[in-house]
Length: 226
Image (tube, rainbow, N blue to C red; front, side):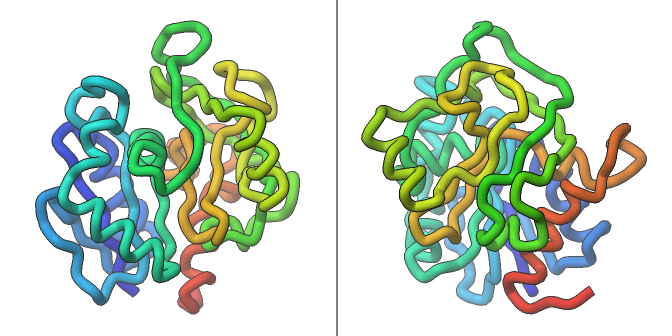
């Protein structure tokens, strides 16, 4: 199994993601600069958190036009598991791989705190080891993390079971407390909270097992046994 972590100017969670994938789950993981093409032998792609291009214009707006995105779109269309975390989620939305928009938090402040997610879809490559309505203790760290979509889009998300995670409480004004969604096919997932910051007991003060299951789900999805 080989996973590619895409690095943009301003990515700052790429090494955290690499550590979890490589050191915790023993996955063959490689960084890919956003100007480089992605190899065909990848099994999954991760777009990490950070502040690509300093969040100029809108968070993720410039990175969505990076050369690597054409490869990401191609692999997505072929069913490859793709995960965007925080800024990675914003990039997936700006690249129109996922619907909706990420707006400034309703507090207009950067938020960095622990919260709880509720699993709403456990059939994606990143949630298949989780139980429906399972609670996941996990941190958020964003300034533009408020998910928004119009009524028509929300109805489609519900109809197609594309709402993957909700916040247990209203943390930032997101529509329907949405914290993560997937594409209609289910292989592209975006989430604002940071699972890479919650998978080890040394840094998760509550319970690291649920967040770990996000990565174990990926292993399960591509047939890797632990």
